[in-house]
Length: 308
Image (cartoon, rainbow, N blue to C red; front, side, top):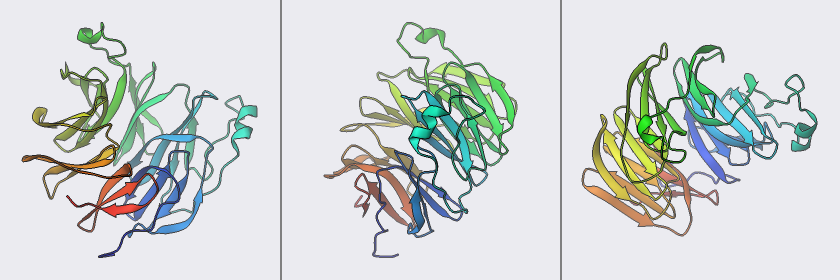
């Protein structure tokens, strides 16, 4: 596709999930669209379940996601096969009449699906399974068949107890055989992925409310509510930056040894040389590398190529 842009995505995207055979576009209102290796659509848009999607990950080549509806106080976790056609799910009105677990509706075409009894706060996947965090419930590690490997209580950090909601978990990341969870106040615990044993615990002190953490190998990008970002390498601060607004998406580009960031009407490039930026009229919702080119997906569904 040299010199051309991918076809537009016909909905407001939450994320683009890359898998071995191509991509999956996921919309904020629960829309799904399969994309081939060139980011071109395969088949039609479908809504497997009439709820907004909250988190997504890949577990051994399978899509795992969470759906949540705050009005109906309902949530689901389910797995979809990237290679199977998408199936249209039930109307939202049906959910109002199915109030018991036995009668609960689930995403259509799912390999498996579970009713969640609490709000999902974080989700991450790996080759042998995935892990997630439920509000006021705990941290769970699962196998690819959705069988539970272990669960532990939610952590707290004594030094954060006087700060409102500072212990609330906002992110979970994986690095080799360890699982790390982060709180709004910068609390971070690392666990053995095999058994849930605590490896380390501390607080990363920074003036801001942590909202998200992007991670790749030893590199981490901490995203704060005030637009600040902090790049950590092996747990140590490498660089900092201030954005015009909230981060929409980011990824670590190994070839450039830099972070590529989609911000609020801006694109950013964070490297050892500092931060470079380009403003734009639209909001980029996702950024990715494809065949050596950097593309940004805008909130209007159009793709543009990076100039940074």
